Image (tube, rainbow, N blue to C red; front, top):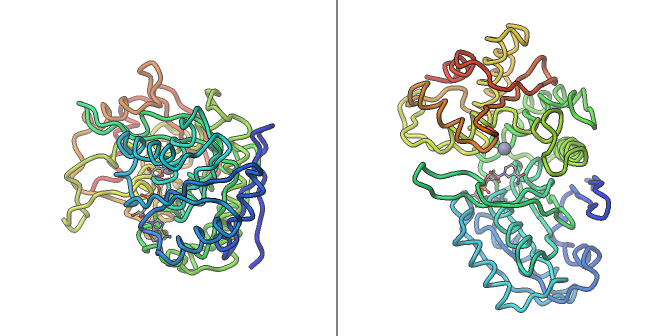
Length: 387
Ligand SMILES: NC(=O)c1ccc[n+]([C@@H]2O[C@H](COP(=O)([O-])OP(=O)(O)OC[C@H]3O[C@@H](n4cnc5c(N)ncnc54)[C@H](O)[C@@H]3O)[C@@H](O)[C@H]2O)c1
Ligand SMILES: [Zn+2]
């Protein structure tokens, strides 16, 4: 499999994202090139990644002459906490990292988000090398420089409530790591691929055929972790699409047309993924993964748009079909009332000044920002995913 390189162009903060097979075995020389004066490295590892893969990355860093301190973390959303952030900062200090020494994260988006925030804040900023190991983290969280942790508040858990922008120096997506990824997590990553495909015509690096390509992969039961060149190519195209959006609006300042587009489905998703008491349509208890919540959010957004007459009436069914074929839930039981859900959406940090902004599809691949959508449109979105 050939490796693919995507350049994220952000002036002096520019960097490469590399997608290929077996890249972690050669991580050391790449980190050396990205951080020429480094002597030490803190390797923040996701325990969900098989030890063999993590050891290979650590060995490669050591062979490249870096003194490596390893910090294994239980993977998953729970690591995105101020407590884990403090632990990483203390580990960096104990390992005597200086400002040229990188923090290297190896794991899912959650480990990347907290390790990235540690890199952003340790001694006011150290280099960060990000090695995403889930499909979701490769296609989405890996590039863009958003780092953060969740905050436990009286109103419940607020996602990504503390964090900052800190671009990585290098992103290494070793698709071989995806072999151990559970099927459910793989499908969660496909949700972000679908999100990208559904905004692809509205982004700077327009990729009008991304939807057809994603669709093609879904048809060839790719919701199983089979590592193929077409999958690596799709990951690279998703990285390029996100890179284009980030280059256009690095700090999410544009009210329309910038990074905010990447929030398609996410205002619904963030409300859904922290809910307790959800069940599958068959009645089994269900805790939604981020990607699963995004899949539901895509369906909900399509239905909101259709209710407002913004998109063809057939669009919601097309979106639901894509989400279903990715192996993701299309409906959940146990959602609270429409009023409760609307209030949770207002809590989401995207609702600036108390005004809710939804990204809604106008056609497959084309989206726009709609400020203060009427309640009936939001409720129609939720109704579409209510089992
Ligand atoms: N920073 C951003 O721009 C951005 C963008 C999208 C999502 N995110 C964040 O990313 C997080 C979700 O990331 P995620 O979907 O990667 O989930 P995750 O980080 O929670 O990882 C999912 C699970 O997979 C395990 N795992 C990781 N790599 C594995 C591998 N190779 N084999 C087997 N198991 C493996 C982990 O241990 C964990 O249990 C959320 O917190 C979300 O908010 C951030
Ligand atoms: Zn997301």
